[in-house]
Image (tube, rainbow, N blue to C red; front, side):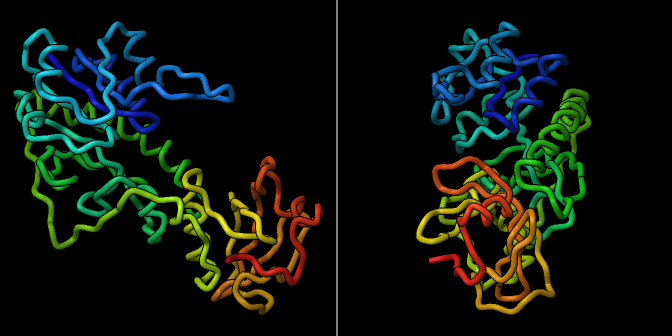
Length: 311
């Protein structure tokens, strides 16, 4: 079985590890180029590339989707049986999708057709979905629009961040992918077309998506902080300097104040009035400093009652 795997960390790493120990072990791994990593910003292989190379699998580093000729050349001229895509981050052309004998298959981190696009995990948290999951779909030329073969669901905790949820979904994706490929190999795959009337979009996140609008309600602000952590980060201006909000808690009943106003302080946090209730800031990263509790930030005179955050 000749499998070509396209993916990038962190979401793709558990799936590749599972494939390497299965009958669907890839003959070729395609992943983005090596980038600076760690404190020293040294250029080194990503976890996906390192896993493949440790297993003796050929690695093709490509910023954009490779051509069919590049894939065939890497495979010694033989067409692949399977193409597996897990968080690769590039649109694949028809010539690539038509290469594999048993089809191109993609693992997407949502319950399709909900949250098609580059940021399904953040999107699910932002809108307050009670559950999400992973979907294995047969790829078509439209983004995340192919028929769905297998779905696995999990609940979303009211406290977990996008980073937390990504880790759980990545672990869920690995066995789900293996089960789906078993069905494909056994000739039992019967993917179901998606209901286009239920499709929603999850476009790629931008830095400005993390800016907090204090006129929103406290629950919506709490979801945004969780959805934007760790990237691009939930941010606000505090005394003219950028403040990253890492963790907090919404309170529907709280002291009144105009949106963005600091209305209370505790030992471990400080409270900010919103358009509906207040938001207690539990952990922050001040500009140029390390992460600390909201209480430490307030006691260090980073913020005081009566200050107004935001632009």
